[in-house]
Amino acid sequence: MKRIVPFLIFLLPVLSCNKAEPAPDGKDLAFVTIRAFETRSEIGTNALPAWSEGDRISIVGDLSDTPAEFTLRSGAGYSSASFEGVKPEGNKYMAYYPSSARCDGITWRGLLSTRTSRTTPSQYIGTLPLWGRSNDIASLEVSAVCGILRLDLKGSGKLDHIILEAGRPVSGEYLVSIADGIFAIINGSNIIWIDTPETELLPLKATPFYFILPPAQYEDLKFTVVPVEGTAKEYILPGETLVEAGVFTCVSSDNLELND
Image (cartoon, rainbow, N blue to C red; front, side, top):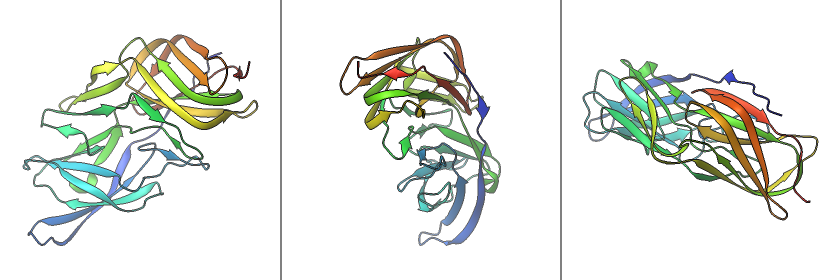
């Protein structure tokens, strides 16, 4: 039986940006603190998100030729982290995550992974694209352009992988219009595959699995749950499932016995 419980998750504020001593090349360093909520999503046993070592954001100014990449300076393992980079030139600024996305001044684009992995005890949901604009680099706020579908499973048996199938592209290269924030998938796939090493379903406690999805009204989403041993089970969400940007949508399945 389908159970949908949507709730808003965030705007992500850039809490501070302090001007440092000039860098050796004469440019100004900037230190930006961003609070993470389901961004890169290392979700531990306490259900709190955390930035990871190596995370990067990009900030571009309207007078700069290229984006400035800001690297994580401190805060790995915590929900709030400081990033350091060279302040871009401009009077208006745009920030986006991940920094591997590309910006040409008209659009910014990146990649939603078709295949990812869930590891324990942390649960990695993938990279949730974020962006924001401001006239003041010290007051940048970023928000999500996708939503997150959380599938709660109960049952018994050890999983190998789960596949979500939709009637439209849900992974692949995405493009966001800077003018109006319209999101689109190009050259995409209709599936998302999550490898689930060392994950075992429990009969009384739900195990969550996270799928980053473009905002849309989906019909008859299908999940194929494949065990390490045994027969794959199909689970279909009948009817419509609304996924909104910046919103969690939670669904749950009946108990799945994977050992028969």
